[in-house]
Image 1: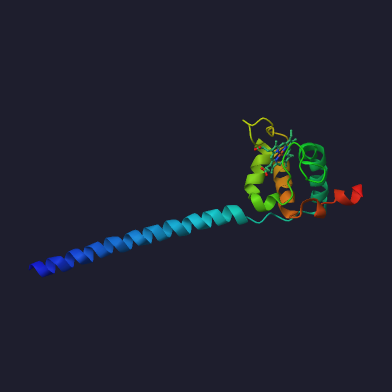
Image 2: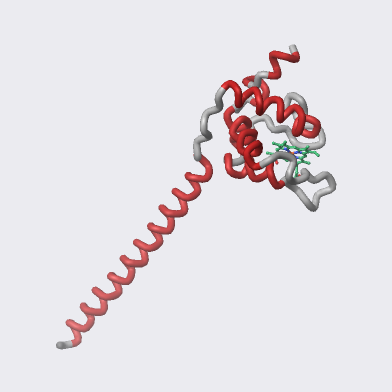
Length: 141
Ligand code: HEC
């Protein structure tokens, strides 16, 4: 094997390494994106009329005092369009575990059962214009 052959071999080897590297990076990228997409786009299970009713009642009793009867925000932030700011899973987690534990006004945890947290999260995400598609608007006026 002369020097030219060796040179070629080295070139071949290094391009192999390069290709594998690019492949790995591409794979990480695709995996990262699909993971992100799953979390963001997990479509909520549609609510039955009875569930909408129950969610609205729960919201009024448990969340409305802080987030506003019309989700406009009082001591807690407005929840109008919250489904476009947070994923379903994240909203469910907040509803169960609260938020801002170290802040001056935190949201307490365990306000509702895990099932109710799931219901409220789906309801919040499925009502993208906030109160406008929620049933208790009709009741109050
Ligand atoms: C005692 C008042 C209080 C109650 C009751 C309450 N929250 Fe909150 N909530 C807050 C506060 C305060 C924050 C903001 C915490 C922070 O600054 O990180 C918050 C934040 C949130 C957020 C994140 C919104 C955002 O834009 O950051 C969601 C979602 C949420 N609450 C849902 C609910 C649901 C659902 C209920 C009813 C089960 C509920 N909250 C009941 C006070 C409350």
